[in-house]
Image (cartoon, each protein chain N blue to C red):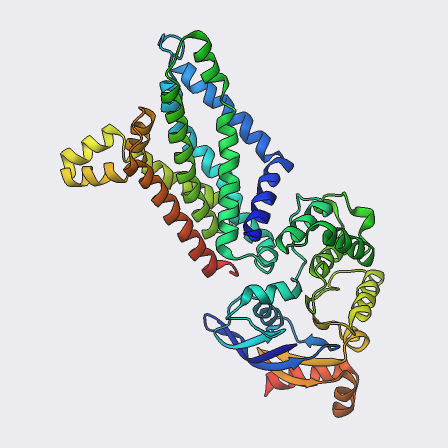
Amino acid sequence: MIEVQGLTRRFGPITAVDGISFSARKGDVLGFLGPNGAGKSTAMKILACFLAADSGTAKICGNDILQDPLAVRRSIGYLAENAPAYPEMTVAGFLRFVCDARRIKGAARVDALDRIIPLCSIDSVYHQTIDTLSKGYKRRLGLAQALIHDPQVLILDEPTDGLDPNQKHEVRRLIQQMAKEKCIIVSTHILEEVELVCNRTIIISRGRILADSTPSRLQQDYQGTLEEVFRKITVGKKSA
Amino acid sequence: MNGFCAVFKRELKGYFSTPVAYVFLVIFLFFAGYLPFRDGFFEMRQADLTLFFKALPLLFIFMVPAAAMRLWAEERKTGSIELLLTLPITIPQAVLGKFFAAWAFLTIAQLLTFPLPATVAYLGSPDPGLIAAGYLGAFLMAGGFLAIGSFFSALTKNQVISFILSVAACGILIYAGMPSTLEYLSASVSPALGKIMEALSFQARFDAIQRGVIAARDLAYFLILIAAWIYASTLVLEERKAN
């Protein structure tokens, strides 16, 4: 469902993403791991067609991100870092706006809202303005926005960042629930999360892919916990 | 088209779901009433709105950039631009949706000045064609200023900077066409420069339209100006959205 080939993006002298390639199928929950500034978010922004790549390309559900970015955006659900939304809108108004933009109308809209509101547990804040929501609710609203059109591919940039342990558990449960039917990319720097929800791990540092394997294989290969593996791979490369 | 409609609806509602619209309307309508009266609206003993339309450019120099400054600067500051442009909405659709929503809002503000024409109609028998032409000129000028404001809002994350740059740009376009500026330029620099400035300025076009002369070239001036600044906004956004 996702085919990434040689994706590169520079910001001035800094190469944020340096020729990464990977692919993912339906049923994959792919954990993007890496230190801060490794290029995880940049790569996800390119896949969500927010940023343009300097070179390389990717195909999502058969659509090329350079040739048909609109079709790509239609087929994916994207949760950006910090789950941006419009603070002055109500949750209801915001979801209506997303439905408008995604052409979900009439009965389909009622169905989508009936499905998504309990799924993301946002019923209690449905008429509240987004400004007044806690971080956890904002993140869940971001997820609702990303899931409202039931996309085949989900790209979630640090979906559990800043949430309390219960909320983290909820979001992980949600990801696990959807895993079979979709192809999901999750970026995180919480290692236990990778062990819990991902069946594949890609470790990125300085814009390059340093490891692409399953969490358990990585632990076997490097003989240690995932945290030790992460340190060995990312710190080891930096000093080399 | 869906993207345009979604953005347009959200933006127009957005004005009224925050105090922005109400503060704007109260201040705008206060000055739209105050300025003509200061210049002797009743003392003129003429049943027309010349004084009102004369005061509008000055009012627009400040009020239109105030309505336009948040268009993109706020999206970029809060990061919601990343949400907006990862929905199936193209940049031109988003730019046009926001622009037309703000234009519709400014048109509502202008329509709410109806007590002035109503007063004039009650007291005398004004030329309705002239008043309609005046409003058409004001509508186009608001659109022109708004397109400039949209560009400067796309240029920066900071609403204050966007406001000041737009005020300066709109001010230049108005004051370059004032008779005193044109006389000075023609006399002390070169007559050709005076001609060029007059051709580029809003003022002469707006004056002509509000005198009731609706010439194709004046309409074209406003439409080209709006299209050019809107196009520039899309280019700047494409370039800077992620910065």
